[in-house]
Each structure stands twice: as structure tokens, then as C-alpha cells.
Image 1 (cartoon, rainbow, N blue to C red):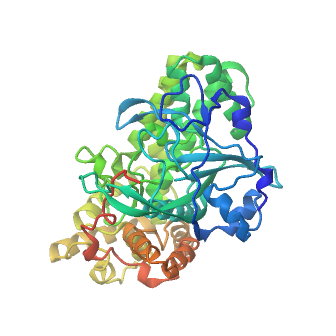
Image 2: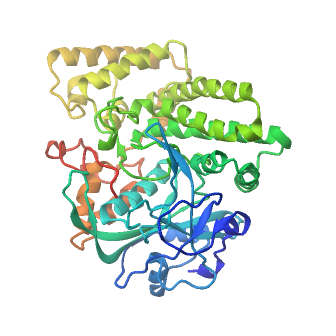
Image 3: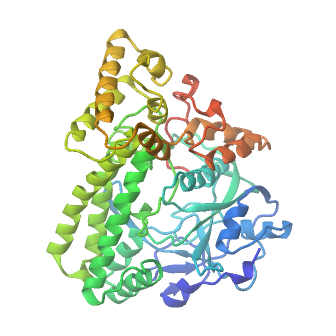
Length: 513
């Protein structure tokens, strides 16, 4: 691989702690600290993403490159560091946080001039590890590797994954925070993104009143990642905030489209580029439930439940607005922009639902249709992905019970079947008023509704198999996630088996790595 092409423009521009000291501490008034990966004696490659490596400019993998994939024996041009940021966690100001398990190698530019940051996750302690070891375990690393790639192929803005490797050491984790720590296999994943900059980077510097650095950070972000912004002065910063709002709204809409629940939407887990970032206690939706949260730490309040993700993204943008206020200096603009965000989000959200149902355009009457549909989905506990797959097969002659009985997580009683039949009649009536043909409607649905989503129980089975040294299921899932709008493996197009309903790691997870 072309490792010698990696550079560190971020550390050349911004103030940092250059001590290489891994002691966990506050690093005031800086945006990064240099730090060396821990190094691992017996690494073993599990998976590598050759397409991504070529795309970002690293080129082909050779056996000698395994050292780089786990942070061993790095060349002189790779000067590693972790970034400092702050954040609001579960609605409360947490102060300085930072890359506790992430270490950046730097940035590489491909032949087309596109820049990509490269980052290890699980390569050792940093000043921001907060009394942790900076390691990662196999289960969290597999989940990050596979889900980020699944989201990419679904068409959802996301960080991506380059490699997954065993570190050759065991790591102690208390998976459910219940006083039962266990030894687990350690692993390192390399993830990539155009940038890993978060709301929290701006929150940190603004909270410390380092306004010159804040301005430099905003200018850096616009120059590198928002080329469409060509204005000057305060208007430039206003356009920047509006663009972040727009990207965030579209990201949330995409999460709703595919049924993704992030689980921990703290401001430090929000990308200023509108990317899905930090795959922790996430889940794809099985039975539809607006109140579902996959994160045990989020119980009982369910702040980050599926149906609240639009609302929480707006709350997080308020915190970013507060951080950017010293540059924008216009409270009314920020308030108006954030109020408009809610209106804009629900507009594009409902437009997205139109595509899932195969409707030609959003009409005023569709709001009532969508509300009734949501109630039906929750009452009958219908599988989100499978429901739309079956809906594509619906016609006026369909046996509704037969069509949907393997999509519900409850028994379809006569009363429930009647409700389904009433819905089907209303749906057919709405379709008949379309200005597009049935074939065009079906094509719209097929482009919007995946056949395969990476469910937690599949990840659980895959992790269990990898831990025994086998990779057959990993290879099969990888092929499926690369083709999510096709049904390559019918056995994956099924409800979550009841045996996994209460299995830790299948229905809910903790924030533990």
C-alpha cells in the first residue's frame, strides 16, 4: 500500500500537545495530542476492503502491510495523533472528551484529488481515554467494520471501514456494566472518512473562548469540505451552519428510510459533514417501534429512540449554534435556521416515505395515511424491512393475511387481519391516483426499500463464528451487504428468530466496547 503518501495537514495548522504522553488528562486550548499506537505482537488479519483501499489511494494490500493495519512499525511520514473535542452526552454537558480509542494516521489524497482521513480504532490509550485502555474487542470491531460498509452500500452517508484484525491479546470488558467483566478477544479496525470532525470539536474550542482557533477551524472545514460555500465574512459562517443543518436533516431522513437507530446521538457523535459516525450500540429496525432504543444506557428515558432521532438532531444543532455564535453573532438567524430545520426535516422525511410507498409526490392527505400506517405497524409489530418488501407484491387480489403473516412478530388474529385489509384498500386507492404508472411506482419502491439489512442477530452469529477462527459467514454477509437491494440469500430475508428476542447483543447493547 502507498503508506508513504499519508500526511498530517491538521496537525500542521492547529495547536496541539506534542508530548506523545498517553497519560489521561485535560489538554486545554489544543485540538490534538500526538500519541503512538500501543503495538501488537501477534496480529492476524480478519478482513480487508480492497475496493476502498484503491478508491482512497492506498492501492493494493501486501502481506507486509499488516503492521500498518494494526499500528506497528510505522514509517517516519506517519505521525500519529488523537483529537480533542467536547460534547453533550444524554443532554448533559460532559466537558472535554476526545478520541479515547481512536488514533489518526493522517490524510491521503487519491489521483482525483479527493482527501480521506485514516484512523485506527482500538490501537491503544490516548490522553482522552478517560481511565480506559484504548483497546477494542472483537464484537465492537466487527460491528463497526460491517455496519459502516452496509450503510455505504445502502446509500447512507457514513464513515467507512478499511480493515479488521485480531490484535493477539485479550481485553477485559464488562459488556452490560453489571459487575461481570470477562476476557474478550481484542481487535483493531481501520476506519476512513473525508473527515472525522464532530460538533464536539467546535464545542470544545468555543467553550474555552479560543475564538481565533474556532475561526481557524471553521475556515479549515469550509475550505476542505464545503467548496460550494463562496461567500465571505459572517455570511460565510451563516452559510456553513445552514449547510450543516441541511446535511444533518438528509442524514436523519436516510436513517429513517432504512430503519437505522444510532443509539447514542451525543453531540460528540455528530459529524459536521453529515456522516453516520461512531457505530456503538446501534441497531437496524426489526419490528417497527418508534420508541425502540438499542442502547441499555438509554433506558428508561429512551432519549435516542428511533422516532426521536429527528428531534434530537435538532437539539444537537442548537448546541452547535451556541458554539458558532461568537463568529455568527446573530441570534435571530440561528433561531430562524433551527426552527426551519424542523419544518424542512419533516418535509423531506415525508417525501422519503412517499418513495418507500411508491407515491408520485407528497400530498396533503398523505400525512394522515402515514400516521395511520405507523399505528398499524406498531400495533401489529410488523417487520420494517420485510413489510415494504411484501408491499411490493400487494395487488387487489392478494390474500393479505398470507402476504403479511410472516412479517408480524405477533399472531395475526381476525381483528388484526381486518385492519391490514383496510390499510391495503386505502393504499390501493392512493396508488390508483398516482400520475405515474404502476411499473414506475414499483421501480421507485425497489430503489428505496432494501432487501437486506444487517440485523443485530446476524452480527451476533457472525461474531460468534469469527471468534472460533471461521470466516464463512463474514464473507457471506459482506456479499449481501454489498448488494442490499437484491435478495442474494433468502434466509437473510426473514424476521429475527424468537430465540434471539432477549439475547444480549441481539436486541439491546451497552456502550461498552
